[in-house]
Length: 108
Length: 124
Figure (spheres, rainbow over the protein chains, first blue to last red):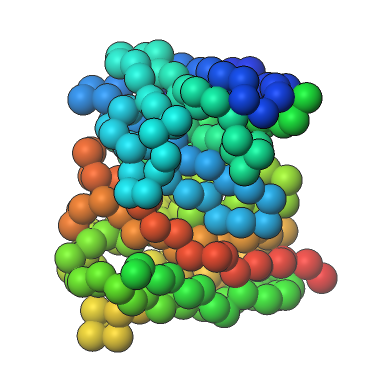
C-alpha cells in the first residue's frame, strides 16, 4: 500500500499570502498519478488538481500543482477567504487508492 | 451539470444492514467508473469500493471486503452499496463519486465529481 504523508498538518496564513502544501509518497508514483482535493466543513471534497499538475474544470489559476516521483506540492498563489479549508492528496497509481491525512489551511 | 444524490443512510444497530443509493445525472453514466468514499467523524477520507462503467470490475477496501457489495444499474443511472454486518467503525459520511474513466485503474481513479454524502451511524 502506498502511504501518503502530508505536511504541515496545519498552515496558519493570512488572506493574500502564498500557501505551499506538501505530499510525500512512500514509493514513486508512476506517471504522476496524484490528485488534490479541497474540503470545507460540512461539504463534500472538490477536485482541484489531477495528474499532479492539471487543474480540474472551473478551478482558479491561483491553484497549481507540481512534483514527480515521491514529492508533490500544491501551491495557492494568493489566498482568498474561500480557500481556508482542508486539503487532501490522493494517489491513483495502484490499489488500494489512498489519501493523505490532510492539511488544514486556517486564517492567521 | 453533473449531479450525484446519495440516499439510504441512517441509524442501524451493530450487525445490521443498510443499502445506499446514488442517483446520477448530467453525464453518460455507463461510460464512467463510480466509487464510494467514506469519512468517519473528524477523520480523513477512505476509499471504500469502486466499480467499472459496465459493473464487471469491482474492488473493496480490506476493511469492508466480504461485508459490503457495490453494484450499479446503468438503465437507472444509479449506484448502490449494500452494507451488511455493520460495525461501529463503519460510522461515517458515505460519498459517491464519479471517476475519471471507464475503469478505476491506474491513471483514471481520481474523483472529479462528488455527491453531498449520506450519514451512516452504527450504534446500539
